[in-house]
Image 1 (tube, rainbow, N blue to C red):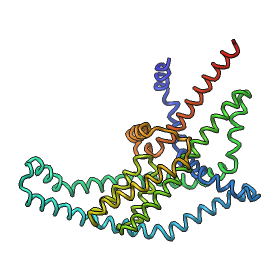
Image 2: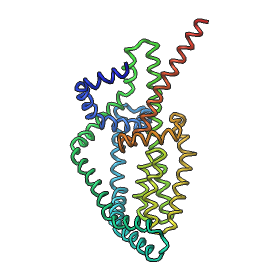
Image 3: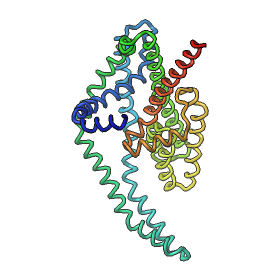
Image 4: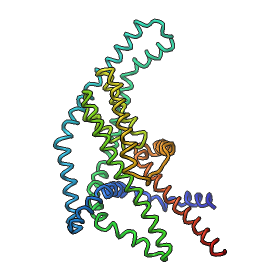
Amino acid sequence: MFFLLILLISVTDFIFIPVVQLVGAVAFPIIGAGILFYLTKPVMHLFERFKIHRVVSIILVFLLIILLGYLFVLYIWPIAQRQITNLVEGIPSMVSMVENFIDYWQQNYTSIPDQVLTAINDFSNNIPSHIENILNYLFGFIGSFIGQVVTIIAGLVLIPFFLFFMLKDGEKLVPFITQIFEKEKAENIRSLLSKVDNVLTSFIQGQLIVSSFVGVLLFIGYLIIGLEYALALALFGLITNVIPYLGPFIAVTPALIVGAFQDPMNLIWVSLIMIVAQQIESNLISPNVMGQALDLHPLTIITVILAAGSIAGFIGILFAVPFYAVVRTIIVHFYDTYVESKKNKKDALL
C-alpha cells in the first residue's frame, strides 16, 4: 500500500507541482520571519512585563532590530570589509610563498620519492587553475544569486510583515489548530505543539547565544596573539558555529591558514584558542542554554548533517539539525502516546 501510494503520487505529480512552487515561493520569508520570531519573542515578552501594549512592544522590537543593524553597519562592517579585502588581495602572495617553499623543498631534499615529487609538481603547476576554478564557482554562485535577486528582495520585504503577525497572533495558532479535535485529542496535539515549540526555541535561541559567545572568544583570542584579520575571521567563526559539531572545524580552517603564513607558531595558538572556546561552550554554555531539549547524540548529528549536505547542500546543513529534532520529537511523542494508550487499555481490562 505504501509503494502504491508513492506510485499514485508520481503519476499525479502535476497536482502537487503548483503546491510545491507555492510553498517554495513563501518558504524564504516564513523561515526568515520564524527565526526572527524565536529570537525576538523573549524581548517582546520583556516589554509586556512593563505593562506595554503588545503592538507597541512589537514596534519597539522592530526599532531594536533596526538599531542593531545600524550599529553593525556603522562600526563593525567597515572594519570587517577592509580586512576581507586585504585578505583577498593577499592571496596571490600566499600562493607565491607556497610555490617558493615547494621549489626550495624540491631543490634541497633529493631523497623524496619520484611519485611524491610528481604529485607536488602537478599540484604546484595547477595552483592557478585551482584558484580559477574556485573563482569561477564563486562567480557562478553570485550569478545565480543575482538571477534570484528579485525573489530574495521580495522575501526580505515580506519578512517584516510575517514577523509582525507572528509576534502579534502567534499564540492564537495552537487554539486555532486544536479547535477541530475532540478534547482528549486536542490536549494531545497541544502537548505535541508545545514540545516542538520548545525544541525550536532551544535550538534557535541557543545557537545564537552559543555562536555569539564563541565569536567573541575567538576575537579576543585572535587579538591577544596578534592574528591578522582578527575581526573577519572571528565573524566567520561566529557564522559557521551555527552548524553543530562541524562548524568549529570549518571556522578554524582559514584562521590556521592565515596564522601559518604570518607565523608558524600561530598554528598552535589558533588551535589552542579554538579548543578553549569549544570546551567552555560545550561544558558551560550549551548545557545551560539548550538544556535537554536537544538531547541528540553527536554521531547522530554528524550523520544527519552530512546526509543533508549531500542532498540539499549548504541549506540542508543549516536546517538539518532542527528539522531532525522536530521530526524526532513528533515520532517520540506519538510513540509515547501509543504506549500510554496500550497501558491504559490493559489497566482497564484488569
